[in-house]
Amino acid sequence: MPQVQAVHWPAEDIWQAVAPLLPGFTVEALPSIDSTNEELMRRSHAGQTEPCLLVAEQQSAGRGRLGRQWHSVTQQGPVNLTFSLGLPLAPKDWSGLSLAVGLSLAQSLHPEIRLKWPNDLWWRDRKLAGILLETVSWGGVGPSRYVVIGVGLNIHRPTLAGLATEPAGLVELLPGIDAARALSQLALPLVQTIQTFEAQGFAPFQADFNARDALAQAAVNLSDGLQGIALGVDATGALRLQTAPGVVQRVISAEVSVRPQHAPRRAGA
Image (cartoon, rainbow, N blue to C red):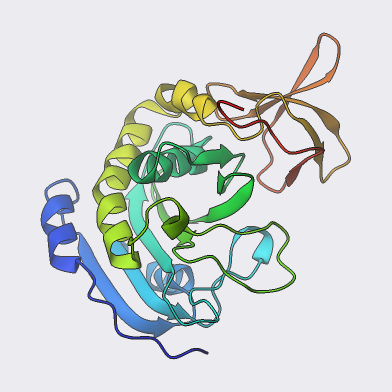
């Protein structure tokens, strides 16, 4: 694993901003770990369910959706941003949470960032970030769960071979940005978004998500063999797919991987 310089994370500033919204909130920064998501999941299984933001400079077993590996350090050494936010949550409907999270990240970073249903941030048809959500239920009445929201954001463009989608780096949009500054921009708006989602569901985010939809009006192939034209998302976050004239299906499975048949159109193109 490449050697990197220690990052000065803005832990105290983030804690001061977020703690009034999340009693018991903590921020932890580690030099290395297997996976920030795995660590918060382990803690929750052991009964530690306080709100926590855990960030690591290096992950030896970072992963994204469908078990794909996520690299926290580029071959050249600079640190990309990998963090997880864990907190108890009890929305009436969990549908669309990952989309709301992605929208929050995009809005906090740059107006040109697009959203690829269901879990990715794109810039110019290249993958900039991914999101992994995991939950733990515990005994008692009600829908409350401990949710762990993992984020992997490329600050620098990875040069690794064999990636399913060509990657992008945030420094291409924001020269001079680093992992610490990006985390500082993301943390508070992300918590605010999650709390809005808990109270109101995905509906308040639908229009803004569709305005950044990377697949809008694109012909797409789904991993289950379904094909059609992507028509954005509905008020629950389901993908609307036109499979034939006058026929629109809702796609809700988080295990569906969407691949455009051709590059989606960009705003202003």
